Length: 323
Image (cartoon, rainbow, N blue to C red; front, side):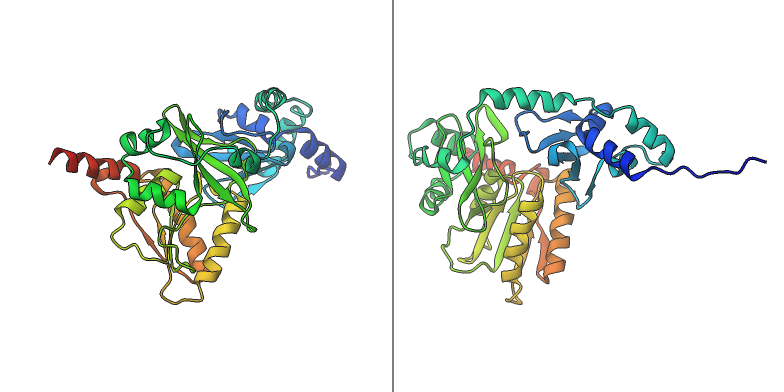
């Protein structure tokens, strides 16, 4: 009788697959679409239904889910995409993909070749201060409904610039250096400046020295909108944006803020995310970070069934103008 031998994958074969099969290729084979404006050479952003977003990094060898802490290599990814697939069959499928290039990597490589590699901080400092009467000012006040006092405070705190076609909202690293920017304009939606390392957009209109109340939204405009609507605002309130999904640098920035806040038992984290499935996942992730830090967490949802807080602000502005 033949003896049954369990399937084993040698260390060399595993290394060949991890190095030779891009996680991006696997996602493309399973129907995920590349978000071209949001993707860079070091971070390919793929989206699927129900707001799911997966980032491919480490030259295709790694991935992480922006709505959770789930991450790994191509082996863990194929298990996620095809639950129940036997390990032997997974290895056979991956083995057939070694050396194939995903379309996303090809697109980003071609785009990068045409785009000068200028640091985000250098590009930021080359932009003008936002002033009234400009196209961007009109977009923010008229189309987005942001009150002038919010914009003037944002200008004062140095977190917004006029990119001519779009407003630029800066993200800073732990040393305070600008490491990227969110871009929002009439024809520029959901984009970040190329080369951006997303941490947090920060707006503290009260100019307090400490943070006892941290409000986190998914976009800078939502953060400013919440500030405009906020009846509980204090000098120690900091309004932040994650610019969508929360990557490692964003989680690190939030963790640092929460660690300082935890020294005050009255500190609170406000999850002001969108009123949809993705917003619910982000709120749950924020609640987890708050619990780990020992900071009280509350969830705020846009009123009247609005999707986000800018929609809620525009509803209030429209009602006031009609009165």
